[in-house]
Length: 274
Image 1 (cartoon, rainbow, N blue to C red):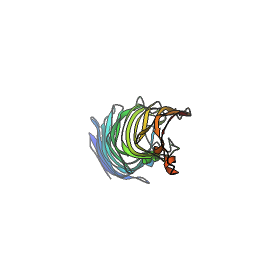
Image 2: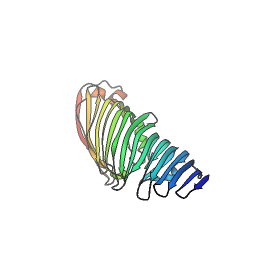
Image 3: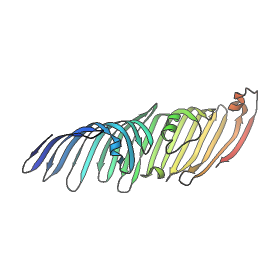
Image 4: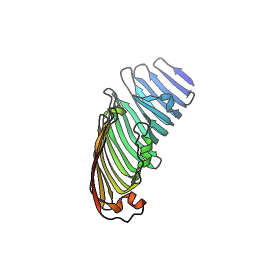
């Protein structure tokens, strides 16, 4: 690298290297107006970063950005392109975004990601002073089995699930994965739940400070339907999920088809899982 100093400012160029990351930086520090620094990382290993605010991160990527400011305040912006990204043990896959900071707020915009076959995009704002997060993430295509695997470290789901469709998630609450508040809606097709096929699934799910509510999860197979409501709270280890069907046709039930038993008729069911 190199350093040049005058009576009013210092400028520099430098190559940067750690055990797992490498990049370069150049900039000017003016004694009167402040600093203006550019940097890029041809390889950034997030295991060396470990945390962004209070959130644990992992994965690798490339980054290009700048930071400007003075003794009173500073801003930065960085374009990041990541591979195998993890956030608080949630698998996010390959993700690109613009990350910027101003006046106590961290902005994640132009988020685009691919997790195996699932795709997502969105934007988030983190208030670092109040430790709050808000924003929206859309899933133009979502694979339920992939999502189940991506959250299993934090939210293990003890039943087999598959299906695909689209979803949208609005986030607004504490910057704490265990206290996350959100509203999510999804429309899924060709679903399987523990061997039972459903043509469609419409889900309306919300969370308030980590307590998840199934406002309505409606599964439909031909002329049959099954509705789930209720909720669960992992921190309190509470579970109360209600299910109900006023009309379920026997020939839509997979056990009847599995044993190839000729059956006709309907049945109703009403119960609770806790």
